[in-house]
Length: 116
Image (cartoon, rainbow, N blue to C red; front, side, top):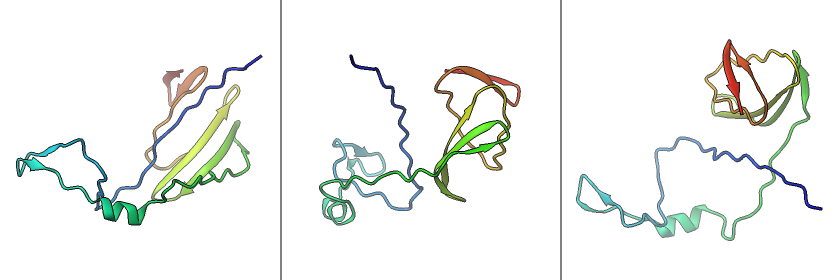
């Protein structure tokens, strides 16, 4: 008997002043009217080929103000990836702008209703 598993993924990246393109679907740069440049050699020099599996570092969950909080990645000032599990009621303090995704159930955040 197989059990169904659900996966929620996020693509997390940092802002950069440089974009390297391996392929660009023949898109046209509106300022020049020509295909946008690609930089395959620079891409090959800056990526792992074949892709190496990098394990996500998971810190132990902590119980904070009624929430089970798991920090998967935390680089203050850059980005943070956190799982907050609330069974009944909890309080989580986060001083920066954040996106929250409700993956199961329903509740409220600062009086705003949320649900899966």
